[in-house]
Image (cartoon, rainbow, N blue to C red; front, side, top):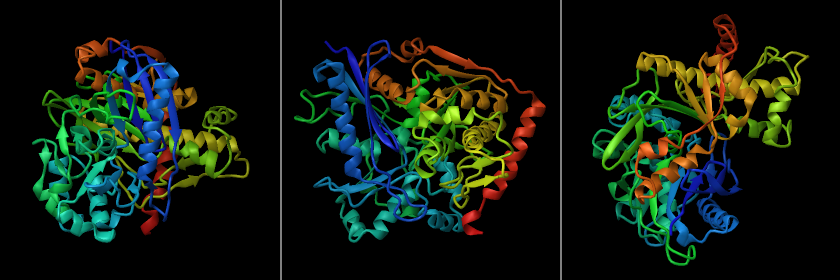
Amino acid sequence: MSEYVLALDQGTTSSRAILFDASGAPVATAQREFEQLFPRPGWVEHRPEDLWASQVGVAAEALSRAGVSPNRVAALGITNQRETTLVWEKATGRPLGNAIVWQDRRTAGFCDELKARGLEPLFRERTGLVLDAYFSGTKVRWILDNVDGARAAAERGQLAFGTVDTWLVWHLTGGKVHATDASNAARTLMYDIRTGDWDDELLAALDVPRSMLPEVRDSSGDFGETAPGLLSAAVPVRGVAGDQQAALFGQACTRPGMVKNTYGTGCFMLLNTGAAPVPSSNQLLTTVAWRLKGKTTYALEGSVFIAGAVVQWLRDGLGLIRSAAEVEALAASVPDNGGVYLVPAFAGLGAPHWDPYARGVLAGITRGVTAGHLARAALEGVAFQAADVIEAMAADTGAPVAELRVDGGACANNLLMQFQADVLGAPLTRPRVIETTALGAAYLAGLGAGFWDGPDDISGQWREDRRFLPQTDGAGRAAMKQGWKKALERAKGWANA
């Protein structure tokens, strides 16, 4: 009898596998970090083999820890870092090089060329995205133009493109399935979010052959089954979604107007807008939340590139802390930021600024500044970026956000969550299961396998852990934001000044 669903959560810095039971409770977890590669300033890469090996390894480890055999798993779901781009040979599965990570800035110049050709309105209308190096399409073009023989092989139909979900599905099924879901396809600059298909005009502008592209399927449905010998029994792959859309689903934000923010490597806020895509006038993304039974649900999204990664920088780059968990105590060692502001634009600025040439700025330093002030400024920089996004959402929808559901590893930081509520002037709600990205993948897979009946079934499983209410008045909030805005302006355009 099938009693569990296994979620594979392939993130930017680690691969995780979480086994969930029928109540949506995690039973066992395994996680492995993998190496981040920075071959040049602004370039970020992963070894494709590391993504696959770490992910299949933790899948087996989670099952072993739980003492659960694969034949007791109803379905497997995948969620992934979305815009990271891979190209491989169809015949052998051999990658043409390292994966180009979503944070990578190498194609910013090509994006500028497309804008100069007057193509940004076309991309915006069809994809709901801005023309930025963040997305996959320009990365595919770079690979075809810079890897020896790649373009000729692509023209012969010998190469496959995929975001990380597609790479994992390919390997899980022994190369039998080359597919993605609508939420990941919507992040490529090559997919029309209204027609639900790859767009030939966009492909021509990017010079990417259609033969490379995976089949686009529902987020909950049939993606094959695991190949013989991979696990001790074949497991159906029944759910795929980009990490932020999976988190929205895992947070049970299934009704229009509900909004969540995930505090992971980056910081990603999604607002469910229902059956209709909502164009943004404030530099947010209009994107696909998920597609179920052929029906698409849309969302507005604001992407902050650096959130939890700034804590990793404090740990690995500066040596101020030994573990990420220590940052809260260090930040709490001082009563305020001491006038210090950190803009963590290490990979440029995302929504609503979209400045690929911005760089990190630490402003307001005086002789009395301590490590505690730096730690506090780092956490506050994450919250200020999220506040900029939520202000843009309110402007686009004409309504303030009534409640923000939060998840991801950094939402366990109570100091950060309280400051976020203060700077937003709105309540935050943290669920009991904060790994909602993996939970969303599990829910989608479980629905695809008939393990759960429907969205209403899973919405009833959501439980609150803690609610954070604003403790700062409007004047205090304005004063906090004033220093942030000054520091933000100094960060913009730095690399091309």
